[in-house]
Length: 64
Image 1 (cartoon, rainbow, N blue to C red):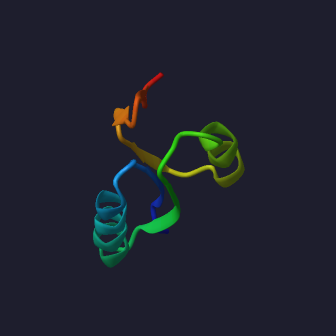
Image 2 (cartoon, one colour):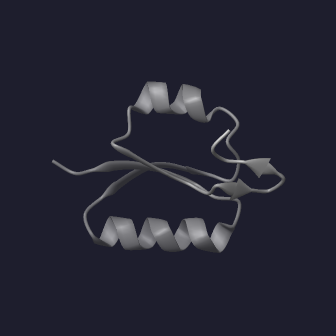
């Protein structure tokens, strides 16, 4: 069974690099996004095993 992941980071190059590395390692990237908008709803819908979240995303605090 593969580990299912969400990636949230405001830098495109980081998201694409993480996606590439994770998929190469056998992870399944369910979503990637540049903002936290809708993140909770998406996580409830997808039920990822892991969320990689940038703690400083734009002007927001990713943890809040």
